[in-house]
Structures are given as C-alpha cells and as structure tokens.
Amino acid sequence: MKGTCKGQPHKPQDFQKLYLSTPMMMHSIDADGCLLAVSDFWLDTLGYTREEVVGRKLTDFFTYKSKTLAEETVLPHFFEVGSVKEIPCQMVKKNGEIVDVLISAKSERDENGKILHSMAGIVDITERKKAEEEVQHLAHYDPLTGQPNRFLLQERLQHALAQAQREENKVGVLFVDLDRFKWVNDTLGHACGDQLLQKVAQKMQNCVRQGDTVARFGGDEFVVILYGFSSDNEPPHFAQRFLETLSQPVTLEGVEVFNSASIGIAIYPMDGKDVETLLRNADTAMYSAKEHGRNTYQFYSSEMNERVLAKLGMEVRMRRALKEKEFFLEYQPQLDLRSRQVCGFEALVRWQDPEMGLIQPNDFIHVAEDCGLIYPLGEWVLSTACTQAKSWQDQGFPPVRMAVNVSSTQFRRHDFIEMVEDKLQRSGLAPECLEIELTESLVMEDIQQGLERLTDLKVRKIKLAIDDFGTGYSSLLYLKHFPFDRIKIAQEFVQDIPDDLDDVAIVEAIFAMASSLNLEVIAEGVETRKQFDYLYDCHCSEIQGYYFSRPQPADSLSSLMHAGWMQTDSDPPMV
Ligand code: C2E
Ligand code: MG
Ligand code: MG
Image (tube, rainbow, N blue to C red; front, side, top):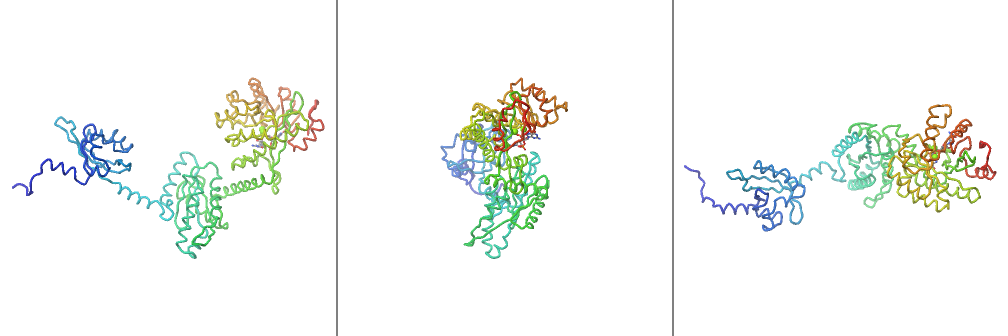
C-alpha cells in the first residue's frame, strides 16, 4: 500500500503561491546574482514593491560592508559549492533602517552543472541581536550609573596593559572610594545614595580624557584607568581635579550634600604588571589616603608620592609667584673680544621665594614646562628683557643685543611668533636687538616645523643662537640649513680648555665649522684668564662668563655702564 496522505497533489502554481505568501523572507537569484523572485514577506520587511526589486542585484539591498563580503567571498563560494547556511548579513530597508539577517540558500543546476537559479530563506534576527546586546550590556555595565562594571573594567585593564607593554607606555589605575557615602545612605535613604553615585560617576567621567575608563567597582568604589599618559603628573592632576569637582555640593532631595573621596594610585609597570596586582595596590594606596585624613590621594610607591607632591607643591608656589611678582631677571654681559666692548646681554630668570629663598632656573624651568606655566613666565621674561634693553638705549647706551632663552614648549606654541612680535612692538625694541636662544634638540624634535618657525623669526630680523652647542645632536646638516646667526659653545667644553686635549679638539672643530658656515661663535662659562687667552688666540669672537661678569640685576649693571665700563680697551675687569 502506498502512503496514507490524503488530499489532492499540489499543482506547480500552488507551490508558487505558497512561495509568495509564506510568512518568511525568501528569494531566488540567477547565476549573475540578480533577483528572479521574492516573497511578499521579503517585500513587506524591507518596504519595497516587487517592481522595484525583481531584476536588480541582490547585493543592492545589502549594507556596503555586507555587499563587499558577499561579492568577494560568499557568492563565489555559493556558486561553486551550491549551498550556504545561516550567513550573517545586513540588509537595508527602503527607509534606510538596517535589518540583521541570516541567509541560507541552495542552487539548482541543469544537467551540465550550469546554475539555473537558487532558493534562499532569510531569518530576520534584528530583535534577537538587540536582546543579545542588551544582555551583553547588562553583563558589562552597571545599571545604576551606566559605567562599565568590574568585569568590563578587568577586561579593559587587561587590554590596556597589553598595549602599554607593546608601546612601552604607562597606565594609571586609580581606586576611588567616597568618604561619606554610608552617611548619605543611612541618613537620607537609598534613593539619595543612588542619586549621589550617579552624580559622582558623571563628575568623574567629566574629569578624564575621552577614551579613559571610569568603572563602578561596587558599592561606593570606582576605578579609573588612565591610558598611556606622558607625564607622571597626569594621574595626580586627575585626582586633584576630581577632588575639586567633588567638593562642590550636590543637592539630594533638597539637602545640600558635601562629599569627598580617598584615591589610591598605582602605575603600570612600576606598581604591578598584571590586573590583579595593580588593583590590589591601588586599593592599598586608597586605604593609605583614608589614613592621611581622607579627601586626598596617595601613590602606591612612597618615592613617587614624595616626588610628585614636591613637584605639585612647587607648581602651586610658582602660580602664586607669578601673581606676586617673585620672579626677576639678571643680565649677563657678553664681551666682543676684538672691540673689548659689551656686545650683548643674556637675560636669565631667577625666583625669590619668600620661604625657600633664591631658586635657580635649572630647578624650576622644567616644572614650568611640565605644567604649562612656562607660557606666562616666558612671556613675562621676554617682555621684561625687551623693555630693559630699550630702556638702556633710551638712557644713551649704544644698542646691543638682548638674548632671551626660549623653551621647546614655548617655541612650538602656535602663537609664539605673534607673542614675540607683540613684545617687540610694546617695548619699542628693534627686532635686530633681540636674540632668541634655542637648544639644538629643540629644533631637531620636529625639523620641518623648526625650520619654518626659525625662518619666520629670521625674516623679522630677529637674531637666532644655538644654546649649549655640542651637548645635543650637533648635526652639521641642520646647521647648514637652519638660519642661525650664532653658536654658543657649551660650558662643558670651555671648562677644561686648554688643558683637556679632547675638549680643545672639539672647540677647535667648532670654530672651523662655524667659520666655514659663516656663523658667529660665543664661548659660554669663561671663568679664567687661561681660558680667555686661549679663546682669544683661537680668534673666538665673543665670550660670556664669570671671568668677565656674573649675571646681575639691571640696576647694578646700569651703574657700571654709567661708569664707562662698557668701553674698556684694556683687559676686561672682573666684576
Ligand atoms: P644657559 O642659557 O646656558 O645660561 C647660562 C648659564 O650659565 C646661566 O645659569 C649662567 O648663570 C651660567 N653661567 C654664566 N657664566 C658662567 C661661568 O662662568 N661659570 C659657570 N659655572 N656658570 C656660568 P643659570 O642662570 O642658572 O641658568 C641655567 C639655565 O636655565 C640656562 O642655561 C637656561 O637654559 C635656563 N634659563 C634661564 N633663564 C631662562 C628663561 O628665562 N627661560 C628659559 N626657558 N630658560 C631659562
Ligand atoms: Mg642661554
Ligand atoms: Mg648655555
């Protein structure tokens, strides 16, 4: 007996009807990938009419990424093998919305193996994908604050450490614990506690750079990851910024609540090389911050604590010093060996701190460079030096050069040239009387920009000198191309001439090179008669050093200048 199926056998048109009206996305394509037929559901889902679709390439209805993948990989494979199963793909609705689908298809061939057409069934998984993403989000983000939770934190930190290891960078891990959270929860209730956490998370997020991670670790604990920072000051700067923001009260149900936090800082690689160690050490440092009276931060390593605190302390004092006018300039004369006359001065900044006493530039310039204070300080130096030079001229002294030291960060700032022009204009000093001293490494950091800046200064007739020549790259190539007027031979080489034969060889090589490149030379740090005589014999054009004069305040120099000291034709006096 045959099968027990009852009813009439289907006619081909019934199958076609079934194909068209089954509530599923189906389509057929030919060997060129063009659509031969689509189901009604296919059209309904994507919002097209049959006329708009049939005859067009299937991949015209894919996103760009899916189209490329289909044309380069999936379709060639399909035509070769004859079937594909659940290929993930993104289709685009007529209204532009994207639909995530899985496509399974089979092809039919004639007896020669030539593809006739194919049949594909498509499952719309947009909703499923959304649900999966939500689950993922719930597994990785804290529902209250919307910040990454501890699992995602660990993943991100792991990733950050791997990258930092490759790039030899540092990573900061900050463990933040609110100081008064329990009090808020106990007295104002949990709803207020929740609100406080949300506000704190937001404040923290506002203090970090884009791309840094602020994660809720649990309860009132947060962990911040600061990725690849350049200066050790960045983690404490963040901590300080955050503590300042946190000190602004928040209003919870009409009550003004003041808050603070204790922050522990651990740095990769010094304080740990793996996720667990870094988190543990940042946590330990946080406890130490609590012991230090809360509302503060502590580094895991004590050496770092001291160094950073000292630097930050100096930064704070320097800001005050600028306001209180505690900086002043001394001027060191430069002597022309042929004319035996003063041909210039170098302006050198000093800081008279009310508690620490006199502080020398080598002890504070690098801090000013690190925290950006070098801009206002450098501007003040330039302005004061130009005004002083002009004032001497106005008193009747012959116009001489005023040399001013400029740091790399100052020189690189986009408005440096305008700033210099402004100071010249305000003081009334002629540009040819100003000399800018730069170190060789400064110019070499970015040769193209360096060359442009130097040329910009040069066309304005400002003089250019290379400071501490011989201690940096000393590349002859850049000397040839860069528009310098003068080389200042570094003190290191002058110190032991003429006894140290190596230094003698270097100094003589510098003279030979300078003469062939048409550059003036000034020797720095000349302290003795022996050095002076030797340099004179070498036809060195200018010297600067204690032998002739120490740097001095403008007032002391004015009286010396009035005494006619500038036009001496005997040996220069020791001052
Ligand atoms: P520099 O530009 O090479 O300045 C020369 C330094 O050598 C000065 O030290 C000067 O006092 C010292 N000096 C001069 N003659 C002699 C000598 O015969 N023997 C010895 N042993 N030393 C001598 P100072 O004033 O302590 O300045 C140190 C450095 O600080 C300067 O080196 C310069 O790089 C920087 N500096 C000073 N003022 C400024 C400034 O206004 N801006 C910037 N960016 N840097 C500055
Ligand atoms: Mg100098
Ligand atoms: Mg120097």
